[in-house]
Image (cartoon, rainbow, N blue to C red; front, side, top):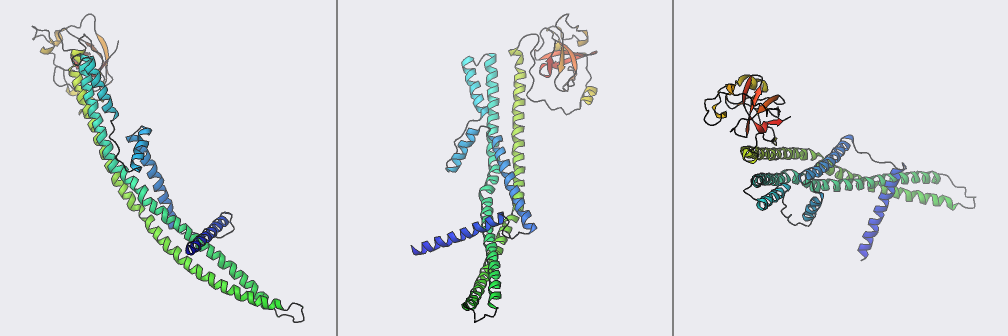
Length: 404
């Protein structure tokens, strides 16, 4: 118990000395040992790395999980070292709702069939999102989090220790300075020859004794300063090596960033492919869903890719007037040039995307151009007849926005 009390008293004395030194430095009443410029640059670089890593980590978590309540729940599970329960993505939940709606409203109806197709696509999107979140968490978030919870905590601990060593060093310097000043003053007073006729000749003896005491105090302060300087230099070297390791951290984070971009590219490519397939499925069944003369516009989720520039497409896609597939039954030899537009029912349409004609029966389209469209009896409702000047040809409904 006696040992513990001594240690407690010693720790309290050290803490008090550091607090006094720190306070005097803040008020400009004590000198402070300054670190070299290179060391200060390393400290600033480390602080900047830590701050931006935290911001990137937090925002990436928001990107992967926009729900703040879900993020808090996942954080608590991680702190309790428990496995995070599997969570249904928004796309998978929407797919489930659509599938249930189709089952109740009738899976054989046009609306029910479409709901089932869209539900399957949404389910695929949800699965792709789940894979992306899992991959990004492992390859990107985990290394950033390991740096903040591992390497940075070690750096912070050594920096605090270096700060304490510096305060101890500066306190020793201040103590030595005061001891030397007191010794010099006592020496000057002791060098004065006493007048033994005085009533108090003992002042000379006291001055000589004080000079000897201050001399011992200076020796003790110098010894403490040498020890404090050695400990400070050793701690500064340890801290400097850790700070220089930030360069390796940057290299590791760069590799993780490439992995994140790769996983994100894969995710969006899968989403595009799933939606393109869904668009084709909906386009093929649109005639059964909307059997009228004019079909409502179904704008695709993402524009189809065109390997040909608009100018080249328009220049290399001639329209041949003979289109047997457009004629009513029994009139297979009817040419498109011989087909007159109906007296009523023609409409203007704006082209949404570039379309490259698959054969001579189709009309090549350029985005944002205006054409005249109409339908013929017995014609596939997924297609319309399009006219641009003296050119005619089939055009897909999904590439058009019907106007007045």
